Length: 430
Image (cartoon, rainbow, N blue to C red; front, side, top):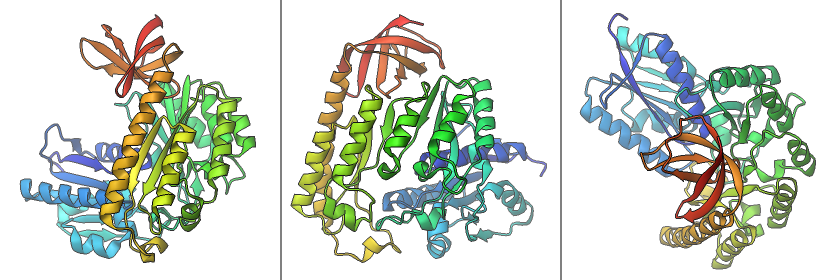
């Protein structure tokens, strides 16, 4: 391959996909490809998501647009959508290369083969029980580094296609986590985010726990460690107490609720009740007094009545979430919930609107509650000449006015005000 082939990557879905896209990019660069500096590219990689219909629609729209604008370009559709729905991936996408999750780390080889021989590739193989280490590539362009330490899910929630897309739980070894963390820290990252498909299940097949992973990262000396999304039932009292022993762990916990109605939680095949969820939050706030709790809630799930929905709204108010990601239920073919009686789309839309409005009120209240508190903000980048922006340990967005502070800088701030979507801080110490 003598000529330089440029590429672009579109990442859809979760932080795990973001990690894996970074690994794909690294592999392409090492194999002589070049990242496109403009909208045009020779190779367009779509690292897909199959969790919602919206994510699939975005992938199809992006592929169609690229084909219109780059008729001779190469489209590679990778990841969760072809792994979940291989037949649809072959029929509904005009892709030259289609790879499931088992093969997307080899994209550079398949792309080179297509360029040299113009032979299309379609590979969707059974998922390995081995952990793919390539997903743990740090992203040099980000203030924080993401390390994928777990893949797969054994929970089989009734609405979710992820076990099909990702397979069974498998984990990165403690030794490899330590090496990745050390590399990220030496590259200048001051915050490491541990991510996984079901992060709380880390190590179950290795005789380890999430605590072991966090402890391994802390030994690198990195000042801040953050956890991505967690399943509530994995957060036992013992685990929470042990995590509290690690000073570098940021007090921000994203616990996926999905519904505040016990009836709906059972139909979702979730492994906890609203009362148990409330206990977990109470325990977290006891061990991490300044922690923020964020969540996901699905509205319009099959069988969800007005009363069930009201329970979700009331429960959200009771917990006092710092932020809620609201998802109208999306039918996923091949799941149990797809065969259940469905709530009308118009009802799903209205419930989404109502809950989003309540979520905004809760976010405003949380930001106001931070006034007068101090914290350490990690500056992401100066946004303009008017202010710099970063996030405190509990993931409160803070703008520091009239300051141009370099990226990666940790600054001690006092929060002196709250606006829509962020707080105002003043520097106490750099």
